[in-house]
Structure formats: C-alpha cells, structure tokens
Image (cartoon, rainbow, N blue to C red; front, top):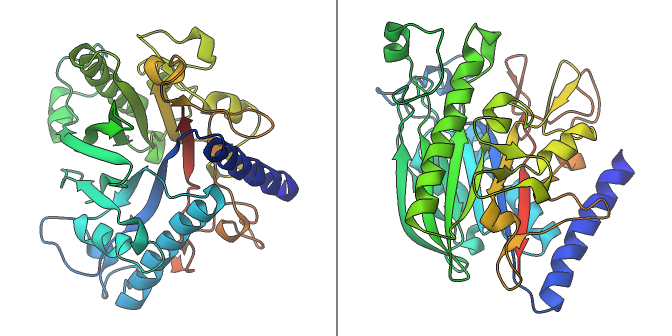
Amino acid sequence: MKKIAIILTALVAFCLSACAQQGERAYVIGFYNLENLFDTYDDPVKNDGEFLPDGANKWTEVKYQKKVSNMAKVIKEMANDNGRYHTLLGVSEIENRLVLEDLVADPQIADANYQIIHYDGPDRRGVDVALLYNPKQFKYLDSESIPYTFEGSSIDFVMSESEQDYFKTRDILMVHGLIDGEHFAIYVAHLPSRAGDKKGSNQLRDRGGEIMYDHAMMMQKKYPGIKIVCMGDMNDNPTDPSMAEYLHGKENIEDVTDKDFYSPFIEMLKDGHGSLAYRGVWSIYDLLLVNNALANAPDGGLKITPLGKKGYHGHVYKKKFLTNQKGQYKGTPYRTFSNGAFIGGYSDHYPTYIVISK
C-alpha cells in the first residue's frame, strides 16, 4: 500500500506538470476537515469549553500553535507534490475566522496569500465551514451562507416539528466566482453527524444533499453554463442516499446530465480507498462532486481531469506523515487527539481533491 501511495502521488504530480508543459492551465480544488481547529479564547456564544486552557482538552496556546502549524504543513506539502497551491480549499471544523487568519498567515503557506470566505453559523458545537481561495487564480464575486432548514423538503421526516425547530447544524457555504474567466459556484458543507446513528439521522444528511442540489439547480438556471463543485465532509459515503439520490451523484461520467452530478469518489470507494477509518472500515466522507458543465465540458473549457495510471478523477492525499505508523491505529489518519489525549497529529480525515484543466 505504501508503494502504491507513492506511485499515485508521483503520477498526480506528473499529470499536473504535463498540463503546465503543454500550455494547459491546471487548478487544484480540494477539501480538508481540520478536526477541531479551535482557538484558546472563551466565546460566550459558542460551546467551546473543551478547547480552553482549563477545559477537558487542556487546550493551551502551545497546543494551538502546533495544530495551526500542522494544518499549514499539510497544505504546503500538497502544494509541493502538485507543483502549485490549491486554487480553492474548502475546510470544516473551524471555530471562527481568527483561526483561519492564523492558518493562512503561517510562514509555511503565507506566500499563497490565501483569502478567506467564512460566516459564523448556528452549529451547537460551535464549528463552521469556510473556503480559502488563491486570489491570483479565483476572482471572488459573491457568497451566501445557506441555512439548514426543513422547509420545502420532499423528505417525510421521523423527527417531530419541535425536534426540527430545536435542531441546529452548520450552514452550507456557497461561493460564486471566476476561474480563467468561467463562472463557478462552490458549495462547502459539513453535513450532520452519524454520532449514535439515531433514528432519522440519515434523513438529516439526505436533507443536506437536497438543499445543495436545489440551490445548485437554481444557480444553473440563473447562470447558464456555470460550473459547480459540491464539497465537504458529508458524513456519508458517495453511494449513500444523501449523495447518490438527493444530490444525484453518478458514478459514470458519461451518464451525467444537466440534472446530475459526477461523483468521482464512488469508483475509488469501491476499489478500497478511504479518507477516514472507523473500527477498521474505510469510508470516503470527504467528497467533491461536479456538475455536467464541469464533468463534460467541451474542448477549450475547464473540465475535471483524470489523474494517475488508474485514471481516477479524485485523489485522497494519504501520505506517511499523515498516517499512524504503529500502535492500535496503525495505517489510519494521525489525528490530533487519541482517547482524549493530545498526540500532536494532524486530522482524523485525509484531505481530498480534484484537478480541473483545459
């Protein structure tokens, strides 16, 4: 598996290099769950008690700075391997804009000059999603924080109306801008958790997929030909209903219509790849899906690019330094905490990305 990972990384870098040599323009679009990037300050309107110096995680400034540095290192290493920084990087499990400002200012990646799109959301845990963008490659036009509501849904929820009124989760971020003169809409989501797998929890993720889909169809109508990427920690595999049915994700690119999304990580999941592991089972919850305009663009337009010998259209960035090398969790993501103890790792998720080019 180690040799395969090394070969795949080399092939991705070769593909990007080849695009540049041929005069083509290649852009990396990715997602990374930063696993609880909290600052050390008490925010009275957020449930951040665990991440305070006197909280359960004993979250000190030293630990925080280590965490920020680790996240910056991952972004830098991906840039080194790809020969360029991400054009767009969606992130989740961040407390606020401050932690992102500290991240993009880290000396390891400061030269990327990443700009931040972030809204404070209503999540009870106090975590949000955001988008980092490279201003040299992406022209920001506008954005919207789409609230998670139950109104207008086609789903027959098992939750009562009072339960629905009480439920709070992350908003879905939509960012509209231009890459190489072409209109793009980028959705960044962190759909409701599987924690406890309570009855009806799957419907909450189904609703998240439905919200993204409905908004994306509206954007396609408003901006004919717009290219769309839906990304995030979906807490579901690409084969689950939230992605395959409610977001209309298709495994085969040739089957995608203007009413569908191409879901490149379905094939990878079936082939045994994963972005996180739980009790020995690998899943890919960190997904990127693209609409037909980006999946099957005509020659001369930006389109999703196959990577490596296998020709996958998605990539899981699974590197040795991001992976436990020994112990009970050997071979799985090297995370920040293990059994409540700070171990100085990175995240419990691997980053994922796609490449688009002309």
